[in-house]
Amino acid sequence: MTPLDLTFQALADPTRRIMVERLSRGPASVSELAQPLDMTLSAVVQHLAVLEASGLVRSRKAGRVRTCRLSPTALQGAERWIAERRTAWEHRLDRLGEFLAETVDTSEPGSKP
Amino acid sequence: MTPLDLTFQALADPTRRIMVERLSRGPASVSELAQPLDMTLSAVVQHLAVLEASGLVRSRKAGRVRTCRLSPTALQGAERWIAERRTAWEHRLDRLGEFLAETVDTSEPGSKP
Image (cartoon, each protein chain N blue to C red):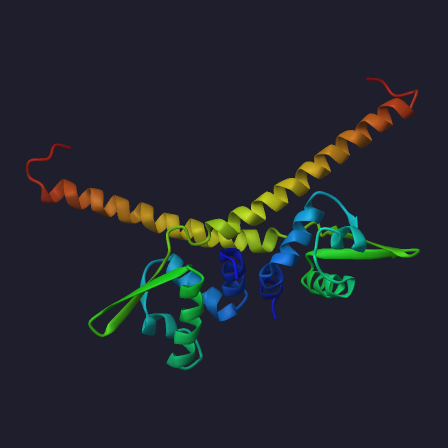
């Protein structure tokens, strides 16, 4: 599994996206993460493990409280990959538009430059 | 499964990302998609089915050739979701920075405005 595989896999679950959304607003304890979720703490901990394995989230235990935070470079890889694909696609559309514009110019004798 | 679940799930596989990357440069037949991939055509068709189910790719058969293309709004939902999370996270860092700056200003009597 590459880092991108793990990131997209981690984001493919709605519960994990809720957890990322919460952490994008600041660090949270595991029980704070679990609070809005209708599931056992054990299930939350399993989702957290997937998020940590992907590098999206880091956690540290101090005393009895484990605090989770979004990783600084967390979402950059996935965002960059998507943006690059979208840019390539838009460039292609631009080139297609230019091609069509040129084709119309030369194929319509009545058109003016 | 929500649209975002399906999109991130589709992007979680390296073969499917290669296919999306190819299609971001323009439409392709199934055999053109398969050409750089070291797998059976049947495996490629299965990956294509996942991409189509997610809405990232559309295909149309004309005669014996099935042509695939990236869907116009394909990657926007996923890109927007990630960008919103990153923005929230950066705003939080900005606020933290302002808070620290103010704290330093008031707690250091020797500092000048």
